Image 1: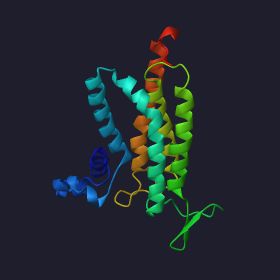
Image 2 (image 1 turned 30 degrees about the vertical axis):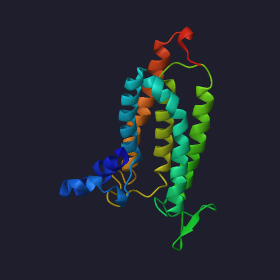
Image 3 (image 1 turned 180 degrees about the vertical axis):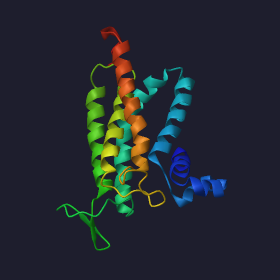
Length: 198
């Protein structure tokens, strides 16, 4: 549900104001990762509270597994013929309706899926402070998404927000990059070697 809420608030706010009940039309699609993330964070908070665990213990456990779902989701975008990249003449371009384009969905599947999974899996398999894995996930996803947005077409309903290249995806990824960096810094600045988790 968070994905739909995020899609309506971040990308289709005018439609939401016009018809607030459109928020519940999940069969129409329109899922936003950033909104989904906020929904998952609320669910993780409630779940951790129910188990009597610290919030970041729960998110550190789940974070390395998330890229698998993200990767398959982006492959789904490619199969569904949606979220294409800009026109290009690179040799690995994909021809869509007679136009060579960046397969931005596959770039994201590779970076947000496979590469981020490998980074988090290796990092989380070694001793590290609580909160560091969650921070690395936010930082890694934010950087990869921000970068791919340069070759991905902006959402048709919004276009570019500023400077002829800034997209909503980049605007929403910046707080993730900052928050990820802050969490990693806090994790390492507060912990002592004996507090590193396995």
